[in-house]
Amino acid sequence: MILAGSIGFGKLTAQELFVYTEPSSNMPARSVGLRLSNWLMNDATGPVKYNFVPEVMWGVNKRLMFHLEGFFGNRPGSFKAEGAGVYAKYRFYSRDKIYKHLRLAAFGRIAINNGYVYEEEVATNSHNTGYQLGLIGTQLLHKTALSVTAYYERALDNLNGYSFPPSVSGRALNYDLSVGRLIFPKAYTSYKQTNMNIMAEFLGQSLMNNGRQFVDGAIALQFIFNSQTRLDIGYRHELYSSMSRMDQNGLLVRAEHLLYNVF
Image 1 (tube, helix red, strand yellow):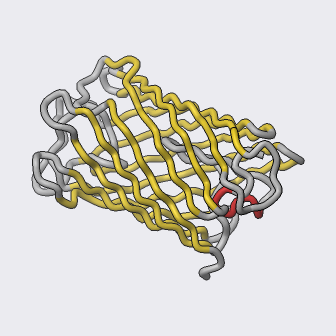
Image 2: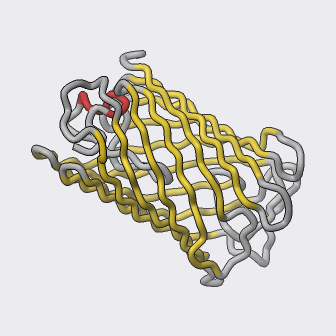
């Protein structure tokens, strides 16, 4: 089972995790997690840009979970707080069998941001005030997991008088495809075994007003320690784009730790 035992999810029948997207499954019920995401992006206009996104996560029950997110960055030169967001996911369908399952979930995000708008890409998980609404479908087949995500995203005016440019489309459709596979261990003997997963993800966006779009590819390694602590290392690269983007290529390093039965 891919990632069975990873971050305590092995207490369930099976579980899948991804680096650049969320799966349709949730974190364990009554658990609390802390996630620290570090983005180092290659900006064509200047030095490397650093974005830091801390998150506090809460598994309300087996179907519902919440994330409280903070957005920090060094644009336009000094490191500062830029905004915050709330993410919620509800799993509404499960068909579980031995070594495989199919799960469907709906999700949404609301975010505020106080930075200036500097690119056409709509990104309410980092740079834009706005919201997301979407669906996730994830199929687990023994050691391989496949997930498809589609969502509508709307960018609004940022705080501090930074209006969204009227010449740029603030409405976007996003579509993501993620594939992950368990590499180690070959066989489970204990939840304390270190898990290693490799994955490839494709992330795309199409602006609804003008049809401009991009497609990115990402590869990542994921390590799970003692069924509770997770380390992600990934690289994302632009494969195609017809829109203006400043920091599309870069490295992601993320650490996550879960506490069980907190509530």
